[in-house]
Amino acid sequence: MPKTADRIPASSRIHPAAFWISLFAGLLLQVTLPIEIPLARLFDFPLVLTLYYAMVRRDKIFGTLLGTGLGLAQDALARGLIGMFGIVDGLVGYLAAAASMKFELDQMGARYVVTGVLVSLHAPVLILVQHLLFESPPRFVLLDWVSGVIVNVALALICYPVLDRFRRAA
Figure 1 (cartoon, rainbow, N blue to C red):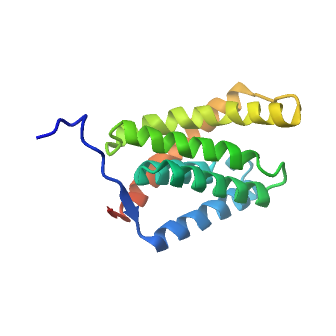
Figure 2 (cartoon, rainbow, N blue to C red; figure 1 turned 135 degrees about the vertical axis):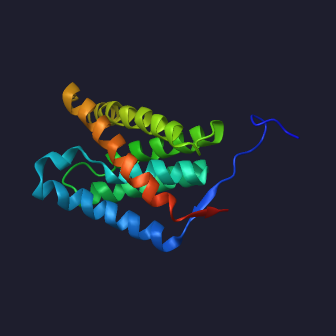
């Protein structure tokens, strides 16, 4: 009998309708919610969805493509530089899938720790990419960063159990 560390973790699939509806709803909320509620700018629905689906599927290519696609859609719907979120969300999607292949993330606590680490990595990498590509001075506000991490991990606390109801073994 193989040891737990030697076995390959099984990936999961999400029902296609739930997958596409959640992505559309996440992008819609990302665009419309900050207009109505100014503090909603701290939420990053596409990032949380990218992390969840990359960890569930355990596929680096899928995580990278999903993160890039959602990031580009987020860039296209927002007023800003096209490609910034696409690059960073693609990287974060890759790292989430790589972490799920390395560690057992079926336990909720481990999944939230990885989510917190990758959400906290998102903002500094976004600022770094913006600085390197566009040579604009990076704007880093520590309170916004900490608040964003807390809010997005709390968002994951709500979203992950709901999305888990649509999971099935691959």
